[in-house]
Length: 209
Image (tube, rainbow, N blue to C red; front, top):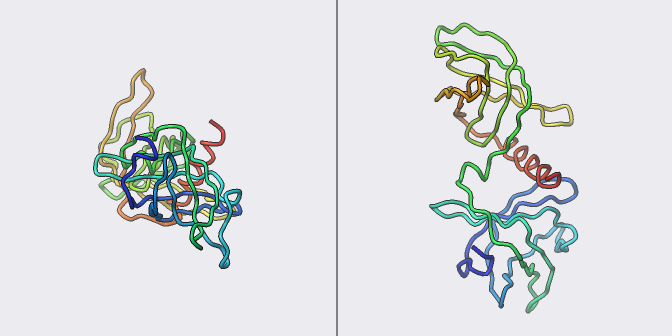
């Protein structure tokens, strides 16, 4: 899907960074001209943020079949009939992903795990945090433990802050080449801080890739 193929008045999610902070907000297509869409400009202290202030923008169009991510969009602040808007163009087609993938980040980092078994016994050991999303996480362990009920990790957010994430094990999959077992864990609740963290990691990965 190209940017200009989006429906008139479509609602989009705009993710961006501004002054080293990550933001996500809903915007709506105001109009389309040739290969350009126009969305409302973002304001700070009553003044519109110019395109130089909107860093690493990603536009997301959500449908029942999946999400369309426009990662290479170019923004230009314009004034039309007294209204501040961004004229947005994108040379590349959108990346289509399923809903979970849009809010998932691959980690592959060692972590300390606090495991609770069905008999309420608790143990602490090390494992690999494979991936992380708003709804769950993937943990790799060297063995299969059918008696594991939940897995807890401490996620460092930076600035001397962290959050505790507890996932209930919903599936266990053996990995190829004797690389261990992947535990799919589901979170019972969502945390706003986790959403911001995932977004910041996605932006960081985008910059380094």
